Structures are given as structure tokens and as C-alpha cells.
Image 1: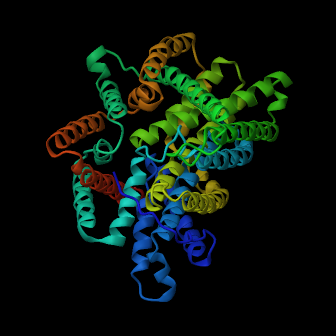
Image 2 (image 1 turned 135 degrees about the vertical axis):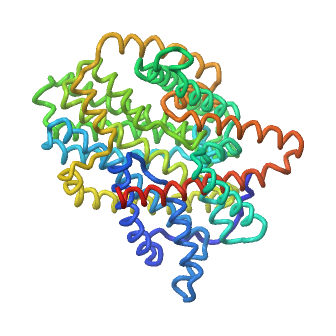
Image 3 (image 1 turned 180 degrees about the horizontal axis):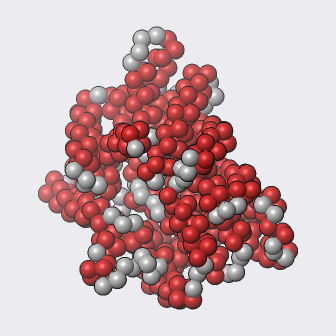
Length: 534
């Protein structure tokens, strides 16, 4: 793995003028790019690498002010801000508010924007409270974060590390041009082998389900059922970890976190309780603003708020665990799962539109925060200086939050322009059509039936391997080529380690970071080109 740099310097501040001015400018650009590409192509590009490249370019400009960007920690703050703004504007805000509009209730757009904004910030805060704990450890893969950190290191150090990253990036760009999923290939060299094997198998089973079984497993909601079972068990596993950690702390009288983590189980449990409470308050505010009290009795309204809060937290766990292990996360499909469950529970249509938007507002921010914090964790020395790590992570949190504020402002000002032109995230049409069509008993039966194997696989793999979550993640994504790429990468990784030994692990990680960076760069510029000329 990457060898971080321990340091005793004071971490740069997120709101110092040199950082804040550039961050605001890049956040505006990142928001515009994210909104344009999501509404035209249905995807959101990874702009973290672009932020790194901008900071690196500025650091090479002569002059005292620009020289400040030679600090790898300022570059990390820039990277965190632009990626947060891009994902926040597109996935966390514009996507949710498009759902009630397409559903035929434009009067719910403003309440949904307020609710989605609250959900986005709660989500961002919860990953800050959870990161580098036993549940979401800093030592875990978080592959895009590794790629961002390696890009910053390469620009700072040069030498062999830089050349390995450059060659990896070139290979990543070439492979992406020829439709090879180089991010999936690169992830295979970084993440947990067991988790990624299940991810690859899931991708292949989904891609070839018609040929193998004679039917499309997605149309029968089999992947969704698997994810429900795996997600519920994952939530139970997380609660058991927290309870076990609190018992150990009580028995030993040792309050600080375990040596390998900067967050203790007690701190995580406190963050979970705080987040759950905030989600309930946000859900009730959304319900009041959306006028749901006119279509539901008080008991059902309260039940809706609790269900929305639980759904948001379970969605966080599902998306976060997928992002942590594979660098991919099925945020859209996860929100659809809770929409279908809400339909089965009998909530009225307006409540369903607000529910799915509220759940969808959170997951991407959670995953994106994990990538950013992982990059910072590496650059700050992998937690060896606890005080510096926590201070730096707080500055990252503030930088990312400033990006989310800019994202909110951009969506508030521009969403009407997109909607009047008929530009919506494509998945919004799926959500709206699902609500209008309703759900039949056969779908509910399949969800319950396939939740059982999902739960069993997750339970057998345990909380470290996350086999059920990763298999279901693969099943929810239609990309069989990515499945081949993951399994091929795992095979190469295994053979290299067998014949070259552990000393080959660091060069492989740097090359893999290059593959992921190349895929991100190609995807970004290709998406910008298509969106411009579409």
C-alpha cells in the first residue's frame, strides 16, 4: 500500500483566502459540469482528479500566492471541494427535485430542494463522524481516493512514483477509449479480493442473466431483493460492532479508539444516533413543507418520517460499503429499493415522490466524502499523527461543505432553466414512472424471497468481506465488461504477488491508481465533449 508521510506541520485552513477563492471558482465550474452531464448523459463525472490537476498547474506558476498550492494538503482541499460540488449539485440536489416535477407536482420542487439539501449535509456529516472507524476504516480501499492521493504525490515528488502513475494513466486512457472499464480493472489491485470477486461475479450474472437463465433478473427485482437482505444484515452487523466495542471500552475503562482508528465505537454510535435524529427532523420538515399532513393521518406521517430516516441510513451503509470496497456504488438502484418498499407500505404518491428524493439525496455525498477523506488520510500520514489527521479531516469537511453550499446555490438558481428545456436526470423518469405504475404482489414476493439468500451470503461473509453487499452491487449494475475487468485484475494481482512477493504491492497500487485516474480523465473529457455537442 501507499506509504503516507507523517508530519508535524500545521494543516492549511479551508477558509484561508488562497484556498477559499479558488475553491469557490472551481465549485461553480464543477457544479455546472455535473448538472450538464447528468441531464444529458445520465452520469456524473469524477472531477476530483481535475481538481488535483488544476491545483498542480497553479502550483507551478511563479509568484508567492500561487506557491501556496505546492502544499499537498491545499491540493487535497481543492480536490475535496470540487468533487463535493459536482456530486452535490447533480446527484444530491438536481436529481431529487426532478422527481416531483416529472410526477406532475412542480409545487413540491422547493420543499424537495430544502429536504434534499438537509439530507445532503447530514450525509456528509455522518461520513465525517464515521470515517476511520472499525465500520469505515481509513485502511480500506476507497479506490478513487487512492488515485487522487497518488496524483498529488506524483506531482509533488516526481521520480519513479510519478512515472508509474503516468504510465498507468496512459494505459487507463487507452483502455477506456476501447471501452474497457479501467476503473474496475484498477480497483482489483487495491480492494479486498473476496469482496471484489463477488462484485465481478455479480456484474457477469447481471450481464448474462438472459442467456444463463432465460430471463432478465433485473425485471424480476432479484438484485433489489438481494440488496434488501444484504443491507439489513449489514446494518445489524454494524450495530453489533458498535455494541461490542462499547462493552470492550466499558470493561477496559479505555475511552480512546483502538490503535488503528481515529474514531472509537462510542464516537460512531454517538454519530449514528445524532444522524438518525437529524434525519427524522429533516423528514418531518420536508413532510410539513410538502403538505403531506393533508393526505396522511398523524400516525402515518410519523411512521413515514421514521421510515425515511431509517431508509437514508441503510442507503448510506449500502452505498458506503460498496464505494469503500469497489469504488462503485448503486445509489440510484438503492433509492429505488426503498421507493418500492414505501409503495408496499401504502404511502400516498406525493409522499413516495418526496421519500425517494430524500433517500437519493444522501448516498453520493456519503461515498464522495469517503473518497476525499481517504485521499487526505493517505497524504497526512495514514493516521500516524492523530492530531494532525483529525485537524486535516476537519478542514476537508469544511472545504467539502463549502463546495456543497456552492452546489446548492447553483441548483437553486439554474434548475428552472434545465426543467423548462425538458432536461432531467434520466433516472428521474424511472422513479416517476414507478410511482405512477404502482407495485404488484409479484414484485413484493420476489423482494422478500431473494432477500433471504442476500442476507445469508452477507452473514456468511461477515462485516469485513461484505460479500452480500458486493454481490448485490454487481447484480444491480449492467456492465459485464467491468466484471471481466475486475476478475482479470484479481487474477493478475494474485499471480504478481505469488511470483514477485509483497514488494510488488506498492508499484501495483500506483499503477492501479493510474488506471483509475486515466479512466476518470477519459470519462470526464469524453462526457464534456458529448454534452457540448449533443
